[in-house]
Image 1: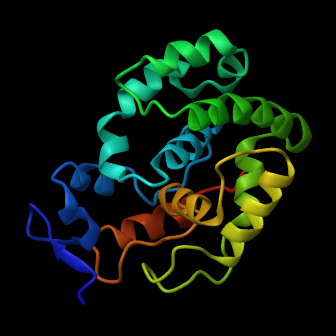
Image 2: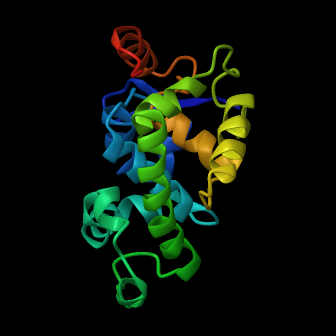
Length: 200
């Protein structure tokens, strides 16, 4: 099975883009490019946890609603949420109204504060798990690194951070270049990774 399809400009793209027209913009402008901003990293971990059992199209369509509901994923602000906020969010039709996942975001915001205090930043922590020998693009749903990060995050008290969720996070945030061989964005991602300064 081919791993690429023809994009709107006739250039090859990762085959998963064909699932929805809006995927092309997300794929071309965000997916797989290295990120060092703690707020964006926290957001992506949260959105990947909400995606569990659902489609990314569902989450992407609601992303701005999620951002509004969770204070742009400012984890210091979300860490202050209480039970009244949980009940408010359960009434918000713009997001996925799943109590366990909503409570997990609030819990994880508090754990993110602890992580920053212990490790300096979320970015410094996650980039320690960059794959030295990544799997062949788009052949895996987990990796040794995603399993290790998942295990450590769970040990630190994070929730909804299984190995598959963490691997999807790594793919999206550029910790692994999982653009398909032949995808016209693969070299762009590779170049950005070469120019990227890993946070410490």
